[in-house]
Amino acid sequence: MRKMMAAIEVHLTADLKQTRRVVLRENGGDHTDIQFSEQFVNLELPPKTFDLNAPVDIEKIRSATANAKP
Image (cartoon, rainbow, N blue to C red; front, side):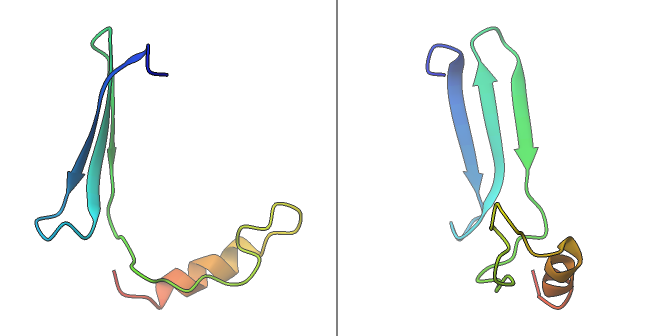
């Protein structure tokens, strides 16, 4: 990956507590721009959210984020 990338830019909020944007710059001039919105801090996700064998239903995850404040 080091050979393909010219730079990785991480743009933070003014208080340095959240990532707002990540830009991946390739050597040939192409780039990927990832922008983050509606970030949640200390969000409690349902158990088994990241279980690869039997993950929790997506609606339970959506419900957890619906009640949280960004």
